[in-house]
Length: 179
Length: 138
Image 1 (tube, chains in turn cyan, orange):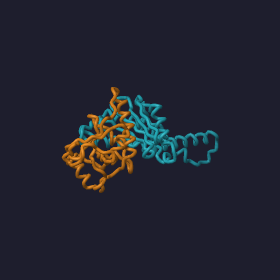
Image 2 (cartoon, rainbow over the protein chains, first blue to last red; image 1 turned 180 degrees about the horizontal axis):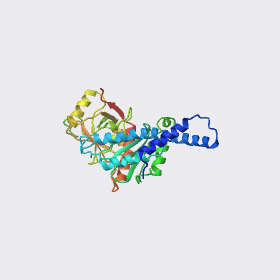
Image 3 (tube, each protein chain N blue to C red; image 1 turned 180 degrees about the vertical axis):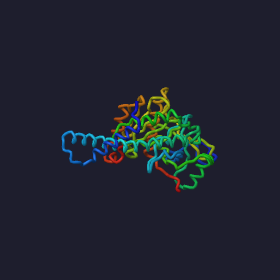
Image 4 (cartoon, rainbow over the protein chains, first blue to last red; image 1 turned 135 degrees about the vertical axis):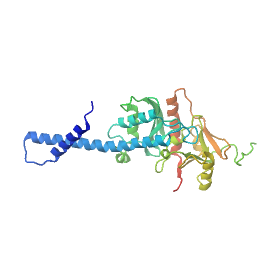
């Protein structure tokens, strides 16, 4: 069962207090307590930064869903983005491990949401989240390119997809875009 | 010899002809790059294009408005040559009316819907990579 918010906040506040406390206690226990508190604070701060970055991608998913909330949104036969697709897309973003470049998003005519990792015009990994648990993906890397399908269980990003994203986004520019 | 179309254009789309794919979503491009999603075909297996280059710009937007109607918002266009489409073993065919309208056709088909999408995505990535982004100013 999740921890009540008030307890979590109280714990974090205590950790913050202990980590910044520069009292005269010099015992091994006091030092260990201070180190542990510092680790909690650092971890919490990393989580907040990460959540903020993922939050922006998730907000963008909701924006696109609102932009494409009816069939024919593209002036042709484009299908609307369903709540099921939104849920799967949000789960996918949440499942991206720390340190992975976060994607840009786009709607597609079949009601899917596309996630795009664009390192350069000719270095792109693109993945579609649709109504099923199978992800269509493709990449281009200069003259090299390919495509595939992978199953997403809602919790862990498939290894093939993750390695594809990492291959395309490792490089100097990627450091600026990492979560 | 084939008769010209009502727009005055030849029925066959030449390799060197420039095509404009209208960008219906703000997600279909980033600051300078067109995304593959902009070229993914509709349910009927076709991607609509306007047989017009980036210039004259006002004429392009007039054709776009004629094609989409007054209600549908668009943000600009991806410009590429018909040759770039054919290099992916796709084709571009005229489809008037409306004037200067065409379709990118011959997208891969597969009984496996997700695999079909992945195959289409790969080709769309290659086309997007050689397309130029033209945005509506203002």
